[in-house]
Amino acid sequence: MTTHAAASTLPPLEPDEAAHCAAVQDALRARIGERGGWIPFDEYLRVVLYAPGLGYYSAGSVKLGRAGDFVTAPELSALFGRALARQCAELLQTRGGELLELGAGSGALAAVLLPSLQALDALPERYQILETSADLAARQRERLNALPPPLRARIHWCSKLPDAPLTGVVLANEVADALPFRRFVVAAEGFQERGVALAAMNLTLADRPADAALSAELERIATPAWPLGYESELCPLLGGWIATLGRALARGALLIMDYGLPRHEFYHPQRLHGTLRCYFRQRAHEDALRYPGLQDISAWVDFTRIAEAATDVGLEVAGFCTQAAFLLANGIEADVAAAGSTAERARLASEARQLLLPGEMGESCKAIALTRGVDCALRGFRYQDLRRAL
Ligand SMILES: C[S@@+](CC[C@H](N)C(=O)[O-])C[C@H]1O[C@@H](n2cnc3c(N)ncnc32)[C@H](O)[C@@H]1O
Image (cartoon, rainbow, N blue to C red; front, side, top):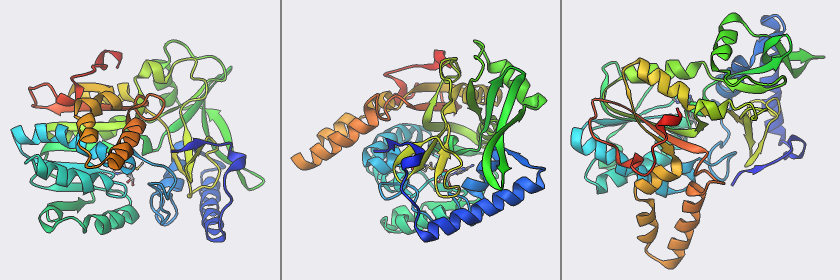
């Protein structure tokens, strides 16, 4: 599992990695120069995560899995996809339709979901993947080509949401926390926005007075009031992303799983330093300027913002619970018990602990279901209902 590390103890770079990092730094210097000496943090993230050929998700590093920088639930264990398949099957069996996976990473989830849905007799008509990274889409193709031809034939990649609203299930695991976010600090003179500037041509964090829109949004969510020096993150893109997805769903469910909290916990005055984390070779740290283009940078998700945006576009918040409760309600224990040998059961039990335990991913990761035209209760949320916390 990922361990926490001081940025000073991170492993050094290979020469080709150092050259890549230097190219990203050059692009950032040019961008900061064009913008008059400062860029907001979300613009910094657009470059270091997504700039073609430079950004972490757009360039060729391994990224996900044990050989990469961090491990997501589908990378950690097939148990995640098998349990999720039961929730998708419930939705697809009664109403039919297709499945759309957003940000499919290495293809690990699709590789488990499709055979599991076949075993449950609930295959979607199509399994679409919307992936913004050309590099990851190529890896997904390579991995998913190994599926049996009748399953592989159902998979299609798309570069934008379908023109006609779809019926079925839309899935996004650890995509919301990869959206570029802004950073802010509470100062005596008012809210400051944290961005990136240059000091003697080196990248440095620098704060500027927040603009009117950011200040108004921070005023809205700052209850109870934050102390001086409080710093955190805000993802303005999240609401628009949910609204767009909601409009693309004619009937069915949008299932979002991610690290995150309801707003009152996310922005609790005692959470003084926010939720930003950087990941480099299974080490987590907070130095976002370290190794630009070579490390992942994410912040937790404000699930209340998701619920607000969903309600605004007529979706129902049909469930909200921890990942542990969601996976247990979808039969993860039965999958461990069904292991074919003692050794396999021990391996699966260890993986299940990482998915379920509160100190691992069990509580920090949440699942939310946003539905349209679905009138039954969803099985994945029958053990825990945290909607009132939103
Ligand atoms: C942290 S990875 C998670 C990958 C995978 N879902 C998993 O759980 O292993 C984030 C993924 O989202 C993709 N991504 C980022 N922004 C996206 C967007 N707006 N739409 C679709 N995919 C996006 C990235 O390229 C990457 O595949």
